Length: 219
Image 1 (spheres, helix red, strand yellow):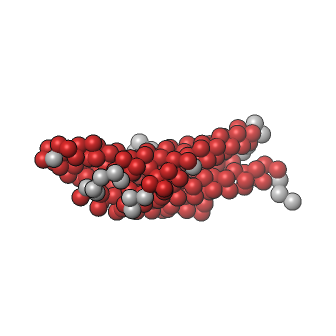
Image 2 (cartoon, one colour):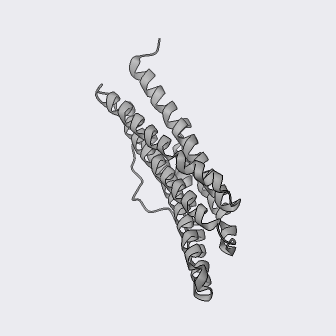
C-alpha cells in the first residue's frame, strides 16, 4: 500500500501534468486564433483562463500540506519545484490569454506580413515547454540543460519581428495599432519560451540540487 505522503506526491505530479496540458493547449489555440483568424478560439482561450488559476491554487494547497509533513530533502525539492513550475504554467496561461485578446483585434483587418513568423516562433516555444515537462516527468537533467540555449532562437525571432514591424509602422501609419498588437503577440511567445526555460532550470535543480539560473551558458 502506498504511503500517504507518496500518494499525495503522486497526485501533485498528476495535477501538475494536467495543468501543463492546459497551458500547452491554451498557447496553441491562441496562436491558431491569430493564424486562422478565428475569434471563437480566441474567446475560448480567454474563457478557460480561470482553469489555470484554479490549478495553481490547488497545487499550492497540496504543496503546503506536504511541507507540513517534514519531507526528506528529495521530496522537499520536488514540492518546491512543483510550486515554481505551476507558477510558470499559470503565467504561460496568462500569455495565451494576452495573445487571444490581441487576436480578436488583429482579426478585424488584413493580416500583416510579419504574422508569417508567428507559427514558427510558437512551435519552438511549445516544443521547449513540452520537452521541459518531459524532462520533469523522467528526471532528465542533461536534456533539461539542453533546452536553455534554445531560448536564444525565440529571442532572435522576436527581435526580427519587432524590427520588421517598426519599419512597417514608419511606412504605413494607419497600420500602427495592428503592428503594436502583433508585437504584443510576439513578446508573449518570447515569454512562453522564457517560462519553458525556467521550468527546465527547475528540473536541473530537482535532479541535481544545483541552481543554474544565473550561470552563463557555455560558449
